[in-house]
View 1 (cartoon, rainbow, N blue to C red):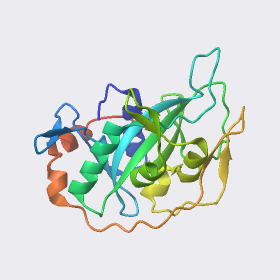
View 2 (view 1 turned 180 degrees about the vertical axis):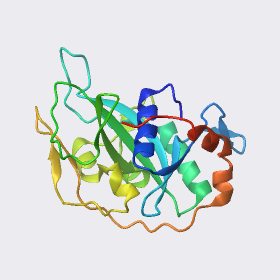
View 3 (view 1 turned 180 degrees about the horizontal axis):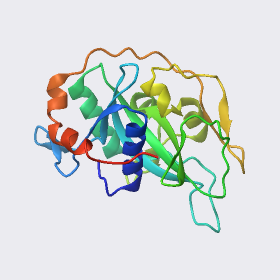
View 4 (view 1 turned 135 degrees about the horizontal axis):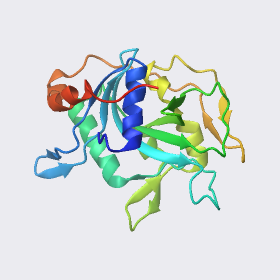
Length: 225
């Protein structure tokens, strides 16, 4: 992770506030797959239910765009490099780990979300909404966004269908009221419904050892709400 990145710092504070065990990966040390450089993930998270997650944090604003012409769209684009990197880590860690894109939306003052929205969380006076998509599901439904810049994205309908509160992944799907959280002006929604089961065995100790430096950093970083 990069603690100078406000979204990644906010996500680390979320993990600490919710007493989740995690390793923050040191992004200053570029990893490689043989002779090929590989983009680092941001966090390795142990869920409350025992789920093992490889997390890449995507910071976004809602609404996006300039203040004069806001875009009420849940931006969920990624780069092909991000996807290739996270899938490489999934291959290294093995099938007991789930690769996840966490979209951390900084909610602007023009939007009012229902107070009971799952994973609507305030840090340093700023509201954030956390939504996550398993990378395998993302890849299965993504469309090319910009060939020039190597970006991809999910269509709005696919994102609403696939995205879950991050708590779903950390609590093994135990939170699923089947509702959708409608947003104001216009009525956009991100689903809170159930997902498929994801059984996860024990941690691969050799893989975690590769991030020992990041674990040491994590013990002193971030602050809660």
